[in-house]
Length: 183
Image 1: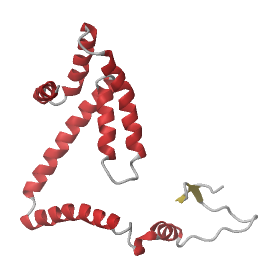
Image 2: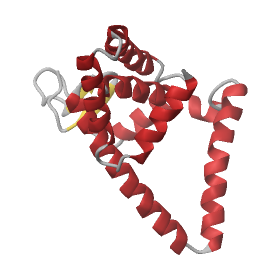
Image 3: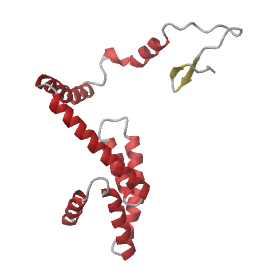
Image 4: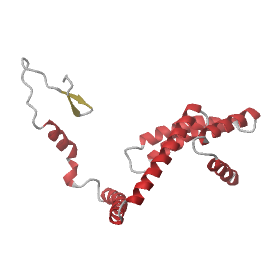
């Protein structure tokens, strides 16, 4: 079974980017029509894919690989749903183009800037782990939402009584948004 999965992965890598996922979709469809693929695999993909996507969204607030879980669920569905396979084709091409652009920019940067960026990228996960181990955010950041709200509302006139103008903010999920009529 592992050898078969490795063989499928090698075949997937050999296909030109921009055609991989649609080819995978067509191969799955042809194998099902010939009776070579199990119907349980299709059911597994159609049930397991959305389950992983929902689980990934449920775990977004927690630290961990929730985006990877969502991507795996979508990848499972891409073998069964053609529009999703096309979406992955466009995403694959776009990410490859972005990677080439970043690589070109990286090569043109001076060495001290490269070191600084690499250090910042290495230190950010370290700080995140340290802050989680130490009990969450430092005390200076715990009141961040309240401070943001106060900073956002600073400089606005206080709303008047029943006869005066209505405030020009709207409350949405605990945040005050500018420019909208208040309730």
